Length: 70
Image (cartoon, rainbow, N blue to C red):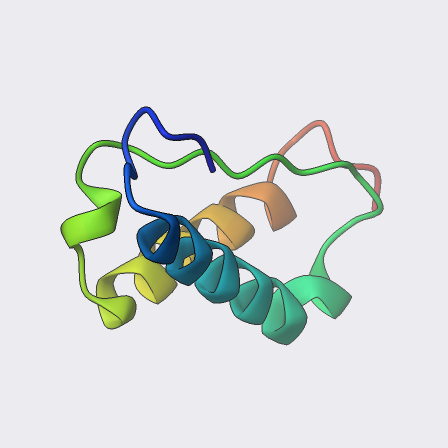
């Protein structure tokens, strides 16, 4: 996470923790691809529940992508 949207270190660390935890839960269902998570301007002010939901939708999108080999 960059300083562009999350200026304070504890905001960046919180976003990283949430991304890691979400990946830990859903990672076994995902294909073997490299994934980069980028924060938006709204991310530091969002609740953890909202961020988990958004990441869950992203994981589903990756899982169901047409370019992923079954």
